[in-house]
Amino acid sequence: MKFDCEKVGLEFFDTAPTCHRATKEIAATPEQIFAVLLDADSWVKWAMPITGVDWTSGFPIEVGSTRTVHMRGGLIGYEEFIAYEHGRRMAFRFNEVSKDGVQAFAEDYQVTELSPGRCRIEWTMAMKTARDGSGIGAKVSGRVMSFMVNHMLGRFRKLVESNPTLAEVKS
Picture 1 (cartoon, one colour):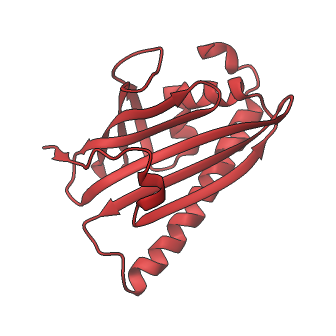
Picture 2 (cartoon, one colour):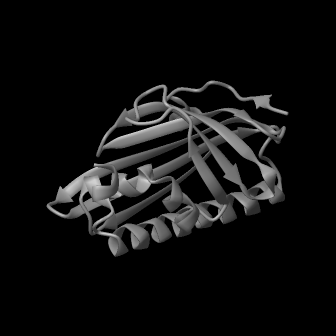
Picture 3 (tube, one colour):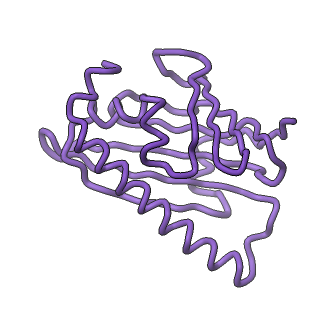
């Protein structure tokens, strides 16, 4: 069974009721960073909730491209890319999910080259769920989620820096 999500745009990163952001500097080129972002097998190595990624529209990636992401607990997200500039930015949203409760969800990855072989990546995760986000439980889970986003981006950095030749995979 699939449940529809709101088809949000880039403005959702400024208006979402819940937003988590993390930033890391990475000793890599934009091409090396995007090689990992575009490699389906790499996602399960750094994003702990993800168990599988299937590119459903093929390459090259562009606005409107789609993929299916399988996560722990049986959640499946059916994604559509809402921004794509190779080496600079990729953002996607859930169009549908396999479980009820997610009203809107989107992620944005922005890469800024700081110097040759060194970049900053900013990851924003924005969501709207069926819960109203108030109460102590929401505050605690929000802090845990922010910690996890930062932790996962650290794992992403380690993966990119340990695979400098991965850029050849998707270039």
